[in-house]
Image (tube, rainbow, N blue to C red; front, side):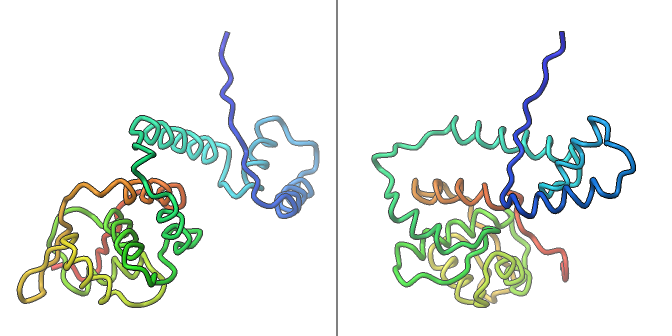
Length: 196
């Protein structure tokens, strides 16, 4: 006997979901078959089709399992600090504004560091482009300088070559990075334009 996968269907806005499903149903001449209806439901939820929904659900489960497999010592983590930092990121995981408190600034810089591609060979323009993709307040120079000062980035003396410095983030930074991974893909950002 074959086991059936349970696929959760998250619906952020029931009204929009209903309108999208009604539009799709109106385009069909006859009641849709089971598979077609499942594809319609997935599309109404914002996925391309059922396969896309299934792949997204599977990836989310793998990420949750990885997070659960590496528990932090909760007593040692400042959850209020993490919540303050998390509130500065938008729904897509971009840093929306620069925090006033230094401890929150450092935590946010770690989150940006985690999204940069490891290795070097980036020009100042390329590292700025990567940082601009990760924040929304238009000050890549501030972020670059601060990351170099904290030892998160290394740059050549003439500022022509930038590289991410591989370090283990502190516990609060690891927790923030995990929270943000749920909002945005964990893939590293590295612009291809203007490569040397």
